[in-house]
Length: 391
Ligand SMILES: Cc1cc2nc3c(=O)[nH]c(=O)nc-3n(C[C@H](O)[C@H](O)[C@H](O)COP(=O)(O)OP(=O)(O)OC[C@H]3O[C@@H](n4cnc5c(N)ncnc54)[C@H](O)[C@@H]3O)c2cc1C
Image 1 (spheres, rainbow, N blue to C red):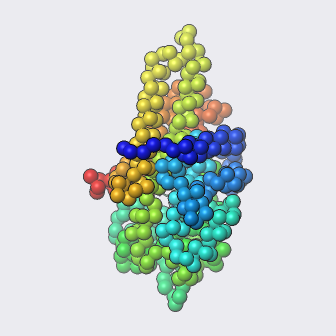
Image 2 (spheres, rainbow, N blue to C red):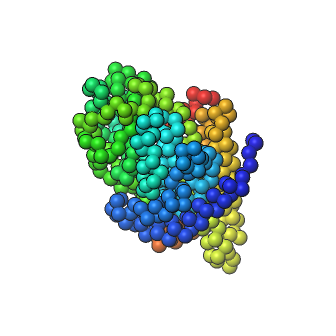
Image 3 (spheres, helix red, strand yellow):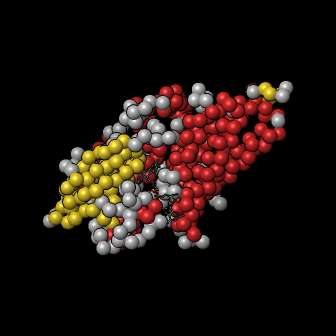
């Protein structure tokens, strides 16, 4: 292991923590209770964060961003998610997809969208692969012509005609640019028959369907995307035809690790509140932290937090250098850290006793939030299946 945290990274962490404390936390719990997904989306907070440079953090300096590497994004993501996981996920989703500008787009595509992305504080990004009939089959992938992405794009002169439906898409309905995986060769499995296109929501035949309601991470939006005879000019194709899976390997490098960092930030917040409560709540004549049963739970959470953080910082550091990067490290960091985070939030809630279960206390939101990463970014089972191939 050969990295240290720079002064610049420390300053960014401080900025993100301050932002989480002053801007995210004061509104997150109230918004979380709003039943309508669109009404609880924190536009104001995201705009303020963008003005601080958070939205464009992952964009290389030469393209106008801050050029943050995966480790820096993890550190900042942890702080934002300490404030609220959904808000952190909206930023992080945009960070992950920002790499499109350096790795996937040509000069023409860049000149069309990069300035808009830089100038508009509310310009977020989304990537869409999952469909009602194909989730894990795309991630593993299970390469059969009748499995995985079924949204088709059929060549028509110098355009493509797209038909189909995506669901669960993070930043769906609010993103201003989407990377969408389409089946361009239905006779092949997804590895050899899928292409990425860049879609903007004003394109004819591109609509939003349902906005999903969710258990946790409620300040981020997930929506269905519908394509009905949607005409996509070939200039919007961002990979070679049928080569989306190859492009995916490079463009999402580090995304699992960033996801892990956000969920860990929420687990840390729950642990801090558990410690505070245990120091003040008196039962059996002393603060409950002095009862071994409670102290042991807090020690286990401390150890799992530290182990997770070390693992993900190391994995993030390797993700910045392709020659050091081991794919199973990314997949297993996401599994390990999201499961540790789930255990930390569960214990934290237990420390709060009956109050932990009440919605007037903060603990139930933490637990709802951390469950999201057992499933999103690929389920933890699929992360293990992918890791096994690299053992
Ligand atoms: C909060 C959230 C945000 C998301 N954001 C996005 C997004 O931005 N873009 C996007 O494209 N998708 C997104 N998704 C979708 C996510 O990637 C999928 O939900 C995930 O890949 C699982 O697919 P599925 O839901 O269809 O479950 P299924 O694939 O039906 O899996 C169901 C269960 O079976 C297991 N399973 C499936 N296949 C196998 C197998 N071969 N061997 C062993 N076990 C198996 C799974 O692990 C799981 O436990 C998001 C999901 C969530 C929850």
